[in-house]
Length: 302
Length: 261
Image (tube, rainbow over all chains, first blue to last red):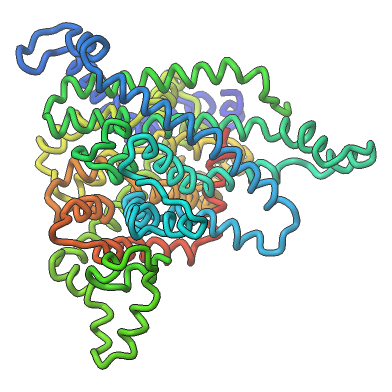
C-alpha cells in the first residue's frame, strides 16, 4: 500500500489498481467457482440423496460404512498400494538422486532415461508391461525366471501377487519424477557444508545422515506428501491391468476404481459421490497426519 | 524389447511358449515377401481403427488448449496476487489454495453434467473444459512474480504503463522459464489423464490416445498382442519425440515445480 503513495496519482492510483486486480483474477476465480466449487457442493448434495427414492439423508454413507464389503476391500487395497509404493519408490529415487548428484559423466543421460516413463501415457505403459513383462506364458519376467529354474507366478491373475505387480509398475513410473525433484533439492545444498564436514573428518555416511538428510528434508517431505496423495488416487493401472471379470479383480479395485464403477457402470452417481468424498477425507487425514509429524524431522533453513 | 515384441506378427509369438521373438523379424526380412509385410500389424490396426489420426489431433488439441488457457489466466491472476493490493485478497487467494488439496475426481460427475448440458461432450472443448483454469498455475507463477524486483514495475507505471502492459510486456517475458515449466506440467497431466476423457468423450473417435488405448485393449477378439503393442507404440511416439527435443526443459521444468514450496 505504501509504495503506491509515492507514485503519481497517490491514493487515486491505488483505487484504480483494484479494478485491474479484480479484472486479472476474475477469469481464475470465476473458473474455480464454476468448475470446482459448485461441482464440489453438488457432489456433497448428490451423496446426501438416495438415487432411487430421492430422499435426503445419510443412506449412502451408512451403506458405504456398514453394508458394503467391497468398499472396505477397496480401502484396504488402496492403503496396501500406498504402503507398497511410497516407501520403496522414495527410497529408490533418493538413492538414485544421491548417486546422480556425484560427478557422474552422463548425468543428463541417466536423468533423461529415468524420466522417460513420465511422458508415456499410463495406458500405453500398462499395456506394454501387461503383455511383454507380466504375461505368464510369454512374458519377459517369467522367461528370465525360468533360467533359474523358477516357474514364475501369474503376475496379473494371482490375487496374492497382483498388487505387487501393479506396485512395481507404479514405482517404475514414478521414480524418474521423484528423482528429478530430489536431485534439484540436493543441488540446492551448499558445498561448504560438506567441505566443513570433511575437515571435521565426517565419513560419507555421516555426511549423508547429518547434512544431506536434514537439508533435503523439505523436498523429501513434499515428495512424500505428493506421492501419498497420488497413491490414494490410483486408478489407471488397476483399470488397465485387471478387468472386472478377472479372479484377481477384488484384490486390485482401489477406491477410485470403485467410484468409477459405481458411477459410470452401475450408474449410481449418488453412491459414487459418497465414495469419492470419503477418498478426499482419507487424503486430508493422511496429509494432516504427515504435517503433524513434519516438525519432528523436517528442517527449514530459515 | 518393446520394439521386437511389436514387430512380430500374429500368434507366432504365443504358440511356442517362452520364446523371445527375435528370430522372426529376421526371417521376414530374408523372405521373399514385401517390406510391407513387416508392418502388417500396423496396417491391420489402422484399418480397424481408421480414426487413429483423429486421436492425435484430439490429444494435441487438448494439450494445446489446456496450456493456452491455464498459462494466460494463471499469469494474470498470479500478477494480481503477487503485486497488487486489493480488498478481500486473502479470501480470494484462499479459494485458490483450497483447490490444491482436493482430488480432482470429486468434480468429475458435476463437471460431466455441465459438459452435457452445454452440449460439448464428445468435442475437443469438452476435453479441455476442466483445465480452463489452474489453481496450481496461479500458486506456482505467483511465487516467481513475488521474486521479481519492485523497481521495474514502478518505473513502468511512472512511464505511463498500465498493469496490462506490465504483465504482458515486462512480467511475462521475465517468467518465460516458469511459464514453460507450467506448460510442461499441464501437458504431462493432460496427456496422462485417463478418467476424464473416458467419461466425457465416450465416442471412441473423440477420445484421446490414452482413452482409446484402454478401449482397444478390451477388444481382445479383434486385436491380438502384437496389434496392441503397435497401438501403444504409435501412441507413445509423438510424446517421446517431443520429450527428446525438449528434454532439458522437461526435466528442469518438473524440478522447478518441486522447489516452489
